[in-house]
Length: 492
Image (cartoon, rainbow, N blue to C red; front, side, top):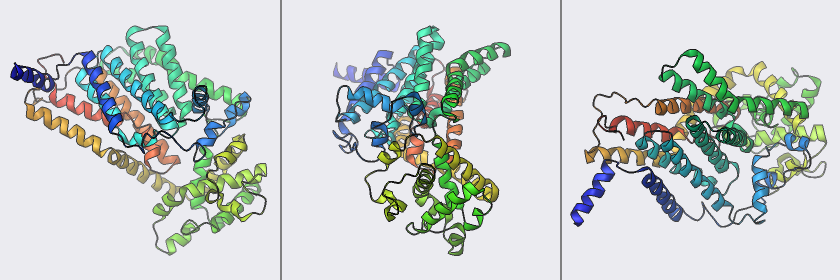
C-alpha cells in the first residue's frame, strides 16, 4: 500500500495532476515555509520609523487638497499608514503586514488565473515565481515597494475576473486598485497601458474583427487610461503643475548637475544662472570624486559613468536643497552654517526637512527646466549614451538580482524532463493558449516602458527595478515550462 501511495504522489507531481484548490493550498504552504526560513533582518519585529524616507510618509500633510497634491510624496502610502496607525502607532508589525498583504495578493492572483481559464501549469509557476522574487524581500521593512506590487497584483486579478464575469463591481475594483497603485509608487504609472495592451494582443491572437478590437480597447481604456487623464487634469487645475507628483524634476536635475560645468552657466537665463552658480558652489565642496566636474573627470581619465552612479544621490540632493534655498529661503541648518552644503551627513534623515518645506510644485518645475536646458544644449550625446547603456544594465541587473529564482526554474525544467511524465514538446508547436501569450506580450511591453522610464530619470539599481518588474522573470519562465512540457493530448 505504501508503494502504491508513493507512486500516486510521484505520478501526481510529475504529471502535475493537481486540482485548483490543491494548487492554492500548495502555494499557501510554500508561503508559510518561506516566512519561517526568512532571516530576521528581512522581516524584523521593529523598523526604524525616524530614518530614511519614513518621516515623509508618516508626517504627510493631509490638511487640504492642495497640500495633498503638492507634496513630493503621493498620498497612497501615507493613507495606508494612517489606517494602520488606527490599530498600532508603533509600526511594530509593519514588515509582517507587508508580508501578509503580498501573500494574499499572490494567492488571489493564482485564484483569478485559474478561474479565468489560464493554463494551470503556467499559472502555478507564474505565481510561485512572483512569491519567489526574493529581491523584493529586502523591502518588507521598507515603504512603497511591497504595497505597490501587491496592489498591481490585486488590480490584475480583478481585471481578469472582470473580463470573464463582466460585473460592475469588478470593473470598479480594477480601476480603483490600478489608480491607487501609482498613488503609492508613481513609477507604476506605466501600468495604465497594461490592461489595454492585453486586450489588444488577445483580440489580435483571436483574430477578432478590427472594429470590435477598437471598441474593446476603448472600453478597457475607461478602466485604466481615462482615470489617469482625469486625475492629471484635475491636479493641474488645483496645483498648476502637470504630473502625478512634483518630483520628476528633482531626479533629472541630478543628471544635469553631473554634466554641468562653469561654462554652461553663461548660456542660462538670469534666474537659472543664479541657481547654477549655487549648485557649482555646492559641488566644489563635495567629497572626492563627487566634487569633480566633467572636464576634470576626463583629464584624470576616470570613468564618468561610474562616478555619476556613485554620486547621483548627492547630486540630486544638492540641486533640490539649492532650489529650496533660493525659492523658499529655507535650509536644514541656520543660515551660513557650513553643514547646509552636505546636510545629509549631519542628520539621520532629510525627510523631515523636505516634508516641512511643503509645496514642491514650483521647485520641481524650475529644476526640470534647468535640467533639460543643460542636458539638451550641450550634453545630448552624453545623456543619450547614458540612457542606452542604462537600459541594457538595468535589464542585466534585473535578471542577476533574481539568479536564485532562475536556478529554481532551471531545476523545475530538469525535474520534469527527467521525470519523463510530461511529454516534451518536440514539435515546438505552442498550443492555443492566447490568453497566456497575450499576457506575456503585455508584460514585455510594460517592462520595456518601465526600463525606459528608469533609464531616463534614475540610475540602474535594484530598488528602482525590482518592484515594477515583478511580472517579467516569473511569466517568461512559466511560459518556457509550459512551452516545453505541455502535453497536447491532455487538457492540463
